[in-house]
Length: 289
Figure (cartoon, rainbow, N blue to C red):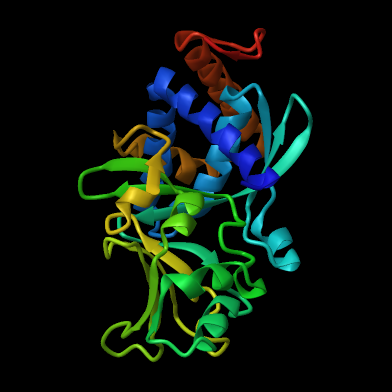
């Protein structure tokens, strides 16, 4: 495990403990995040980055968080949207937050198409275990597991969410075979699917070379098909409730002045402090009770 991965894993352990001890905090936050789908199908993803960043700042006293913003990272050609600072040693690492429905999940946007091109040179259809390690150790696969992905997986029909993290370490150790397969009807490029020694699906490289859609090509998996290679930060599904009052708040705020926003913000901050008190959170101790 790299130093970056160790820092992220420590953060995930702390986050999971906080959620287990104070489930109402994450339930409220997730309910507000997925309420944003009432405004637009894509709205919740961007606002989730802001919400989770603020969640860290308000409730995880061992860490600070900053929502860096897409414009900066796009300029740097990185995918992460949230920067985390560990208070004990001021170490920093970044997180890429994903908000996806239960099913296909993009783990990495392969902007330079190195995953696909590297596999294309191997003359598939099948790569066996003996060759796989050298592929995973190659420069083409240097980004495999290099990103800290935090996926908010939602099931809109049943109004529930599960924060599921893909275990790159377990996946890497389990890859037994890589196959070139037909992606599906009407798709131009094949996919390269990774399987374990029980023929279980792990992940795949899809959508082709540099001529394909840059935002869709890359490394994908599937939260249901690859379930053994995920672990839940929320200890399973958390039911959430849509909050129509929040939609009304947003619409009214768009017509309000900064003075109105300031007054509303003071009330909202008081409500957050009330939640901390109710949940027994102690900022003075630097931890959660």
